[in-house]
Length: 135
Image (tube, rainbow, N blue to C red; front, side):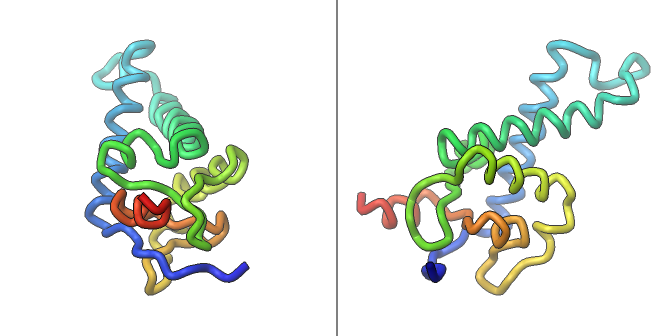
């Protein structure tokens, strides 16, 4: 199926969502281990990354976006214009690519990074999601 032309989200909102996600993951992890200071274990950075990947994949598959994306009014939809989130497996693969950093930085003129191309998804503003959903 050919990808439809969808209005993708701005980089400012995407980075804002990433900051919200990372802060939420740090706070969630801080409940269990010290995340800052001399008492922080060396593995805490990898644990934060793991929490980020799992949180964002589960939220994306169930709610159409990570916690940060939902908070910044973004949604992940199918690239062909269907307003449905990816499956959990696809969302997990997509988030692993995001965690590798390079795939989101290599993108097409339409704003979709390698992680979106692989998953056949697009990150869109809430207004575009509502237009796609016919609301």
